[in-house]
Length: 161
Figure 1: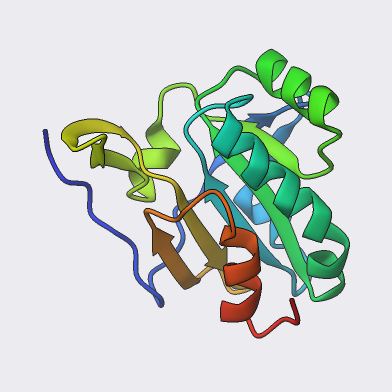
Figure 2 (figure 1 turned 30 degrees about the vertical axis):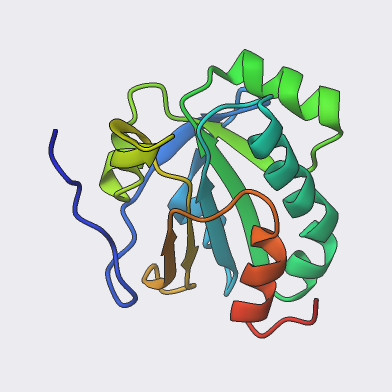
């Protein structure tokens, strides 16, 4: 198992064009229109407890994040149909993107070796990135916790909790 290269602030964010939970194609370039910033977060699987908590936290914070100039997208390997079920089941308002071959996960360093219950396994590394309007990584966080992550991210971005 190889360790994926990790992104750091200042790196150019890898471009992507993925299918959303509504079946639309969404590219990083389209999300960066105007002077918006994009929060791209990677999570292991839709409809699991931790991922649901994290997605609901992002949904609960979406209005204030958008008001501060951020667009939020969640990326997993789940198929668009499962993402649509996840969205509908939990009333999610964030955009969910499908990366079935994990190419975008790997480009961002969000897939690789991780510890799971004390064992080294290969899998999705729960990660969050803030991409500036210029397409550069402003913040790269790996191995984030599902619970409390959005509140911590808001503090890291200097937004009121």
